[in-house]
Length: 303
Image 1 (spheres, rainbow, N blue to C red):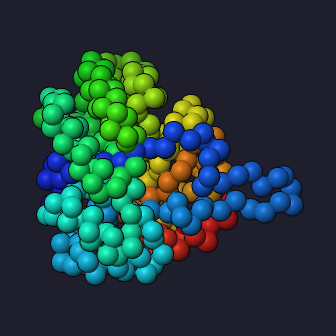
Image 2: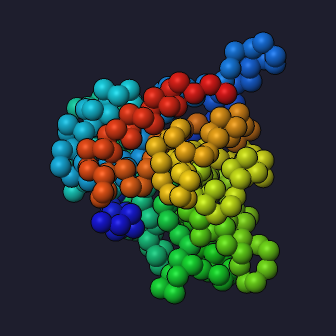
Image 3: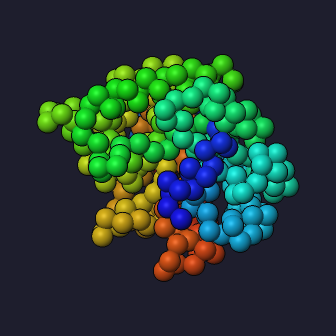
């Protein structure tokens, strides 16, 4: 099943709210005080895992897989659908495993429909989300979008979705892939430029997927410096020498270099992900190995 298929199946489920705390809020690595100070580290209680990574394994054994994530050390997850359960059933499974779904991926309705979105927000509150994140944009029936007007229209829908989320006590974010970094209308402005300029930071924060940003030739440090205080979440997904996915810490991305700017970014959640972690030729259970490798890497990283 494709990522978009999984997300579509879970479109009536999800959510999460981004805190309104300042970028220097608890959980954000603080400066080391200069030479001789202690190195930075990722706060253990801010490490999460995107359950899309484990989608095949969760279909086989939801309860056992969630318990294994807790054993690894996770206390929080980001969901992408409810694995065929209702919001109440999914919350019960998380509670039994000792996990919280602080964040969730759910696509806003297209064309936008406030009633449908409101139901997704209700499910988000049932599950206990803080953040709700739109997971995918940038292609249509003809492939990658190269029309800035399409991005501008979508930005208006993101603002509407974010305002409703805020009223529901949630904070709404946007998750990038690489298509957004294509230049629009034959000019120099990218889709990402349009989305970030046309959305209201009060209603739409950024969840930067570090793999897809690199794939789109965007340096995450540059993104942080351009969007200070707005990048609340990151997907920690590594990039191998074949330009494909790798477990965090085993590829080319210098995560420490990026995380040194965590305070500047406003970063409060570090989410392990690998799109192909449990898909052929890998086995579903190998996604749990990726989850363990990712947690261990972030927990021991010093920068």
